[in-house]
Image 1: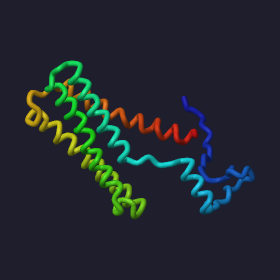
Image 2 (image 1 turned 45 degrees about the vertical axis):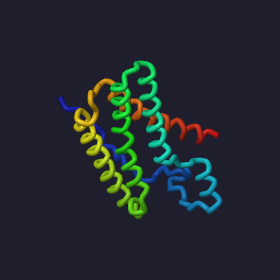
Image 3 (image 1 turned 60 degrees about the horizontal axis):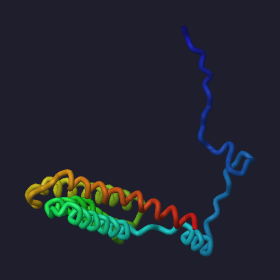
Length: 166
């Protein structure tokens, strides 16, 4: 049993463009004032602010664990888990904010991939070294610190969203 299919010409060209007349809408570069207004309306969030917030969340979590449980080994494990997120994140922020990373779009993409690889590699090495560096190590406490600091990325999205809505 053969199925009849109509061959459609689903081209993605600008037959029905944004101007509604079948052509593409004309491109117009922004003026200096328009670009400035756009930057004010859509401010960028510094990666250093995110890394700082992650560090603060890690320190507060470790202090809370120390106060609540009175067990310093748990607090050190939480703090080390935070460091597994913060230190590689700081390395990546440093690499991505360098002048070399923003020279061209292609260079920026390659730089992002390189620094993301460095970030993952440093995180894995830190996790492998955790039992040697933190004595005695509590893996659940380490994971609590790690997850709490990783969730700060969601707060960064909320910060950015609030600024845009103002």
